[in-house]
Amino acid sequence: MHIKKGDTVTVISGNDQGKTGKILYVFPKTNRVIVEGVNFVKKHSRPSQQNPQGGIIEKEAPIHISNVMVTFGGKRSRIGHRFLDTGRKIRVSRKTGEDIDS
Image 1 (cartoon, rainbow, N blue to C red):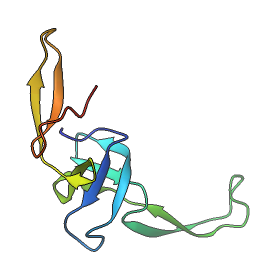
Image 2: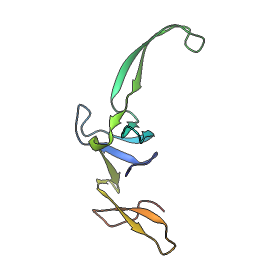
Image 3: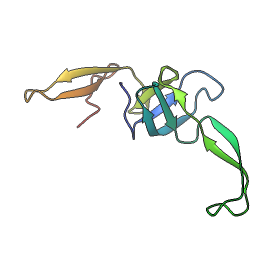
């Protein structure tokens, strides 16, 4: 996957198009991510020990990775890869050529 937890991404399609947020969780098997502040759904919950009141809770739902694009240096960019002399593989911004991973 070209996206990792902690990356800043912009939603490029769907109801939340144009919104920016940080990746909270990555689900590699289903190619989905949860982005902070994007794709909210309402979940009805019963009263429980953790939530004695119950009610309607809003939380972020997963979004497909094809609908998000990494934002680096204030601009959206595709991701490439490059090998360092040590043999380590790092991610590179295709637009600027800068290293994303340190």
